[in-house]
Structures are given as structure tokens and as C-alpha cells.
Image (cartoon, rainbow, N blue to C red; front, side, top):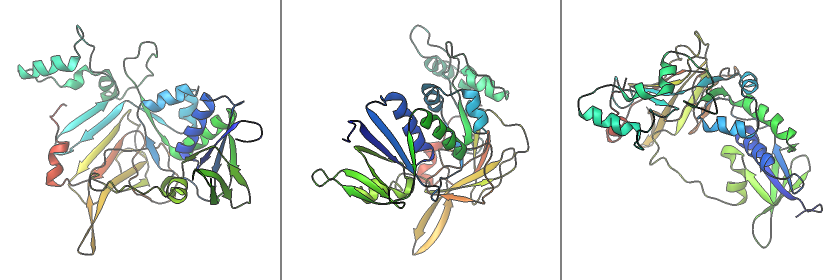
Length: 345
């Protein structure tokens, strides 16, 4: 505890993760009892690729009192109503993951149970026909749903770098203190072994009672200070690398993300957006590195990406603004049935 009896919460690292944490903590804690400090370095920067989000981010923004239209303008964002997966598992397969329910319960029974019964009886109407979000998205339309009577939810595509800067303004208005600096070393408590303070290259010492590590791949606190081991999930994950590149948008953005799997070996620019991406797996066999393209479940997009060439992102996501992403992908036979879905549209 410090002299004024407030608890010190210290966040190391900016970017979307750091500033979301800072803003939410500031919103939900009493500034007379808690001091929140975020330490970030302009020298390190952030991964400024696009982001494709899910509706929980809209809920997060609402919790912070963010004006949605100001947010979309400031982050050069677009709205999305779901994600369309094309050719995953089998060529011609198309599945739309809509951000809405499928119909309404009838006498306490969810709509999909009735749909399954009808399908068994020979009715081949796709379940998407019962999704309000799908009906709107397939016609390339969008309008914010009434929060008091929501028929569907929505999310966004936006520039992750602009989003972090937008959240920084929100958080500092809520009382978060920002310190510019690069961590050089840390102090551990002699009894508990917990982190007691971090030291910066500019000579500042930042003590804290609770630390959040938002330093990304560097894992400056969890990995280096507390020696928390990295857990390798490559045994289960189909991809371990991704790349995003800027490209010009040639048409109006669609209100959903499209992820298309292809027969393998590289990726081309998306047809109507400003970024394209691909995911692949790097497998080492007999000392040689073989790159095998495999689909990645998560995608992220942005309306505008800075022209800085390519960004190679281990286990990161990549994508396009508002709409279509072309993944070059090959599924190992053992995984083919994981992605095979009935034809719904």
C-alpha cells in the first residue's frame, strides 16, 4: 500500500488489451481507493493490423459509455452482422455464423429443434432463413438494432491501432495515468515473490499492488518476472502463423466478414476490401521447414491499414475491412470432418 492508502494497479503495455483493461478498471473502481497506471513505450509500438470483433465488444463499449458512431468514425470502422465461412472442409460448403438467434422459442422450445424435425420430414429450408441478422446481411444492409427490442446483435471491423488510441483517450478521461517508458527490470517481494515494482529506462520506478501484463508476445511480467512457462498448443491448433497486408477496397463494404478456404499454397488480395490475409502452419520435417496453409478460425479486419508492408503475426489474426478474406488452405485428412458442415445456403 502507498502513502495515500490507495491501491496501485499497474498495467504494462498499451494496445487494445492494455487500454481495454485500464478503461474498464477505471470505470468500475473508486478513484479515491484505487490508482490505475498504464506504462507503454512508443519505441515498442503495437501490432496495428485490423480487428474483426464479436458482439461482446459492443457491450464493452456500451459499458464504458462510448458513443458508437463516434467510435466507428474515429477507428475508421465498419459494422458486421456475422461471419460467412466458404469452402471450409468441403468445396461448396457455406456456413453463415450470424450474430442473432434463429427465430423465437415456441412453448419454451428453441426454434432449431423444430427446424431439425422439419428437416427429418423432408423440409430443406436452410436454418439461416430464420435468422434476422442473416436476412439483413445477405441483402447488404445494416441498421443499429433497438437496444430495448433487439432482433440481432452486431460487431465491428476497425483499425486496431486507432482503437487503442481511442481507448487511451477514454481511459485517461476516467482518471487513468499514462507513463511513457520502457521497462528494464523489476523488483520482487522478498516474502511473497510477487512483483513489487517495475523500473523504466528513463529512471522512473513504478510500484504497484497488482500488475497486469499486457506486453503481448514479450510476456515481460508473466514470463520474465514470474517465470510462467509458455504452453505450446500447436498440437491442437491448425495454424501457428498469419500475415496481413494492405490492399485497396474496390467496392462498398459488406456488413459481414467472409472467410474463404482454397486448395492451398499462398493467398491473393481480397476482392473488395483493403486488407487480405492468410494463415498457415509451419511444420519441421527432417530438418527442413515445410509451410502448409491451413484455415484459421479467427479473422480480423480494419477499414484502413497503414502502408507498412507486411506484418508477420504468430497465432495472430488477419483480414480485411468489412468483408472478404481469402485464405489459402489445406486440411489434413484427420481434421476434414471437423470443418464439414451441412449446406445451409
